[in-house]
Amino acid sequence: MNRVTPQDHLPELLNYALVAPRIKVLYVPTTKVACSSLKLLVSQIEGTYNATAAEEIITPNISQEQTIHNYRVHGLTRFFELPRKEQWNILTSPDWLRIAALRDPLRRAYSSFENRVLLRAPGTPQVIFDRCPDVLVDGRIDVAATFANFAQQLHADLPSFMADDHFRPQFNSLYCDQYELHHLVRVDQPGALQDLALVLNARGGTNVTLARLNSGLGISPAQIYTKHTADLVAETYAEDYRWFDFAPHTFTAASSSLVLDPLQQALITNLRETTERLKIVSRSAFHRVGFRYGLKQMRKSLWIRITNPRGKGDTRLLQW
Image (cartoon, rainbow, N blue to C red; front, side, top):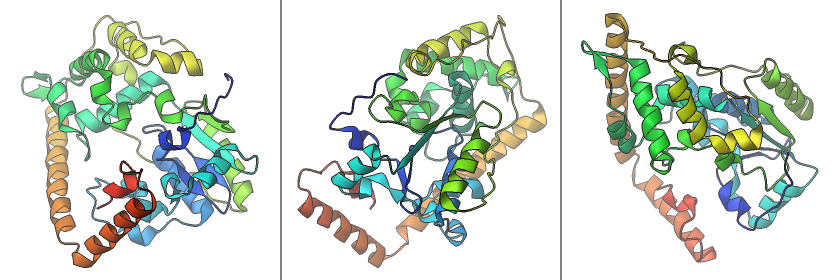
């Protein structure tokens, strides 16, 4: 790994990281890189996982597994909530274990496309839907052709897509040229996640079983990628290839098509409609959470403004 050179603003770059104080672990998540599984594993070993909260939150999650991303469910300390001195201690002290995960950029790009574009998961910015319309054949989605258009759009304007962190390069999520990561797990390598689970269990004195979450639709990248689309995605994420030494891709097909059959199309359409309905119900629920909750959040935000006048951009001020 290249030489580590910390920068003064490093804690701000990693404000989304999660802290397990009991076992002294910092987890820096990267979307679509076993993120759900690792959040669940760390929170269970730390002892903060709240299964009851998973049944009560009102965010629009399309599955129970997705609730692990809510801080009330995983219960881990959010890095941005800590004082700057404590943040730096976590980033530099040998007493803390700092972990993250990596995934082959082409596989991650397809997984992100499937989740955000094809399935239209909640939270996806509208601009991505606008840039990536369905390519239809006889009224049914050609997944490969739709992905090819996505790859072209992503390559042409990555900054617009980075409004959604599912499309952010892994290097731009980890910034691991600025601090030491003890475990940078390659999730594509068999047994790598299980090895990390053993390390964390030993640290926590627990015996938590690693759960594999969010398996996707079962469509293989080999069914989707052509040499052209693979080249586009590899060039888009060239920095990840340079920094993490990912192996060059081996896709050679000149063309590809994967048109959904009528039943598959009906299922995708139904899932999209259900997700849209979830978002509507969730917005209505948020409007009804009550005055006390809103007042509590405003008090918290005002206190942050008073104690940290320069922190007007603090992400905690967005919680209400």
